[in-house]
Image (cartoon, rainbow, N blue to C red; front, side):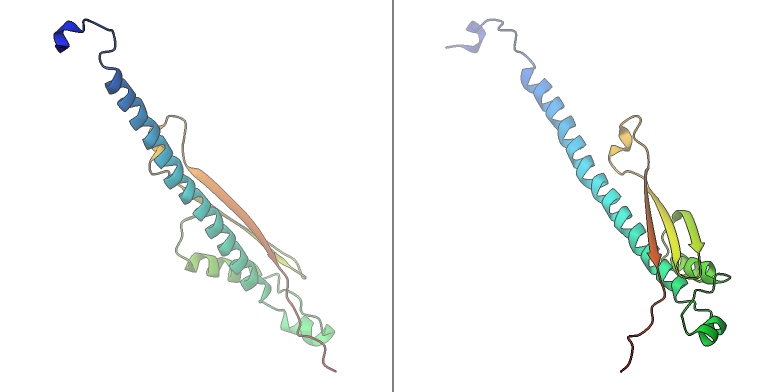
Length: 145
């Protein structure tokens, strides 16, 4: 049978339309995978930096108070400075930083903002902001005896 004898069946361009829509969905799926992975990595990175910075702050022990009372207490005057120095040494672009010291713990909050790589073509989808908070306390060694 000759293709000219088929007549106008009304399905011209159906494959082209399907291909265009399918390609759009593939790009969106790839965007979710890539940018979702970036967001998860940023959240884990913020948590890691917050934990390490909180530990650095909690390691800043007030030596005078330790000698007088025998209990390790955080030096609240300089703990946040130590935590900030450590967080800044990671080289990540931190878009938010917070530190709350007390004599028995240091709380550090880190915010990292990530620009999407593929989903930025979608209107209304902007940067992802990931925030994490960690608390560290000074510890003493086990009791001897």
